[in-house]
Every structure is written in structure tokens, then in C-alpha cells.
Image 1: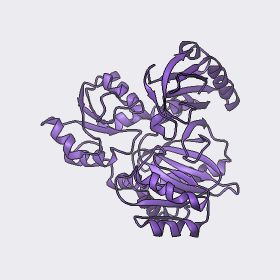
Image 2: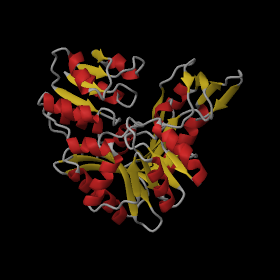
Image 3: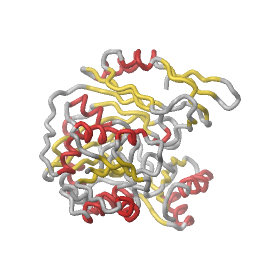
Image 4: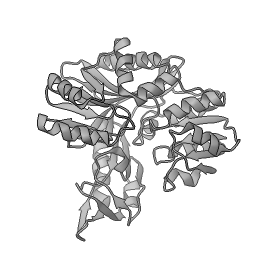
Length: 406
């Protein structure tokens, strides 16, 4: 019996892999509208952060494995439940702390000799304000304990700082906030799956950041165009950081900014599978199934991470282009887009009539379009062809309709 922490669209591949293997699953998620619940054998309507509540809801049942994927929220519970039930795979406590508290990660990175940048974390708003002025604008304000761009703002001018601090404060579970030096450059994701202390697999993509102050990821393009020496240095840094947080086996992804002079800064770690359908992109680009590897790891079974091909690919996140709330009116062209060459995934998880929020955090996405090709140019051309036939209509509050290809 596998206990899976979270049941959103990002966790759905884990449920499908467990079902493919004939493994019974119990979903843990507070929300009853999660798409993966239809594929679970049982549901615990409990927060993935609430270890004691999960144990109580199990009511004497003992899982044989626990998995958290694509969300930091359940990482501490993943560690605690593994220890409590003495499971084959024990997620390390330091990996959970470094993912859930960005200050912990910064300290780990500094101790490991991995390039960083200036930052300050604390509850005193005056001290945070002083730090921002010392760093010089623009700065980045964020909660220290969230992911998916929740509460994050790039602050260009001092007069916007107080509002950014209030905004970040609405997303944290504590009192502390984080002010960071803004690092300009190419935004990359370095995705690794550790095996016996080394990166058994590594994939590096370029992130497409949605215009605006919140650093929302609109997609990934891979492989990132990098010199071999730069790629090797990034993977080596990821390996060193994984070992520093006790993660000798399992997935992790790092947000990295590559500066114009070739140096880089590692912004944070998420010691779990990347969200935004990233594992599916890696599977189709390289033939490496990191979801299957994670399930095997949780079960204590061997797994392979050897690439069988080397293609290019794009994840395009489907989301509202509107700056205000709306309603999903219609989705057209899904079947036509799915039938096009290179389209490996075209999914919209919301239904007509569902409310749609502005895309200012990852949780507000509607779905994904994933396209691959023999090279980056071919993948981009196939993406453009799919977006030409896919149409999403939004009903605005005043009753007008906005036709988009988001």
C-alpha cells in the first residue's frame, strides 16, 4: 500500500505508475477536487503537512511506502512517516528542511562552497527594509517556505517594498520573510536523480518566465544551450548540494541563474520531482522515467536511469492571459492538437464553468502542452503548430469573451 502525499495534476503520474504496477494507493490531500483522486484506492482528506493527522486518518493501516512528488508541502511528512513506519526509503530530514526553508538552503550552499548571492531572512520589517536598501534595487521578496512562485515579487523601487512584504506575508506559515539580491541572467532548472551519491541522471532546461514581477514559470525548453564545461559545473554543484542535504538517492531540482560572464548562482532546491509536467518532458526527451524510478526507490527496488535517446522538447503551461478573475468558457482543438506530430501531451484540467485565476503563481495553471522534436527548432515549430489549433475561451465578468492561445 503506497501513501502518496498530494493528489494534484503534478502528482497524477505517480498514481498512474502505481496502478500500472498493481499497487494500491492512498491519497492524502485536503481538497476533494484533485484530479488524481479518481486513480486512488482510498483518500485521506488531511493536509500533507500534518503528519499526526495522516497517522490518525490511517486508522491503524501501515503503508509499505510513502511518496511525495512535485510539491514541497509534504516533504517533512515524507521524512517523518518514513521513520515512523520504518519504510525501505527514508527521505532525509535535512533535505526537507532545505526545501522548506530557503535560509537553511542558503546556509547549506555556503558551507558546501556552491555559488550564492546576498540575502537576509527575518521577521523584523525594518531590518528587511534595511537589507533591501543595502543590496540595492531591484530586490526579490519572498516567503521562505513556499514554492511555485507563491508570494514572490521582484521589487524595482523602494516605494514598492512595503507592499511586496505584505504580499509575501500572506503566503508564509510563519512570521519571517526573505529579501534577496536580484540576480540577472538566464533562468535554468537543473534536474537530477541521485543514485548512490551521484547524479544517475541530469537534465537542464531553460525556463520561460512569464512577464511581470512574480517569476511564474510559463514553461521549459530543453536541453538548455550550454558549453560542456558549464553543464558539467552545474551538475557537479547539484551533486554536491544533494550530498550536503543527505540526499544520496532520489530526485531534486535546483533553480539556477546563469550570468552573462558564465558564473552562476543557485537560488533554491526542491528535493523532489519537478512540477509542471517536467518528468514527462524528461521521459520523452531522454527515455528516462524518473516517476518509475521514484516509485521503485520508495519500494526499495532497483531502477535504471540510463538515457536511451537525446531529443529536444518544450513544456508550455496553459494559463489565463487575463489580469483578473474569469471563467473558463470553452476549450477547442484539443484532439486536433494531440494528433499533431511531436505533441506528447495536451491536457486541460479545468472544465468549462470553472473559475480561472490570473497566472501569478503555479497553482493557477490550467494544464500543459508538451512537444518534442529532433532538435530545439523542430520542437518550437511543433509547439507553434499546436498553439495554432488550440483555443481557450474565457468569459470575463462583464460577459465578454476573450479568445486566446495560452
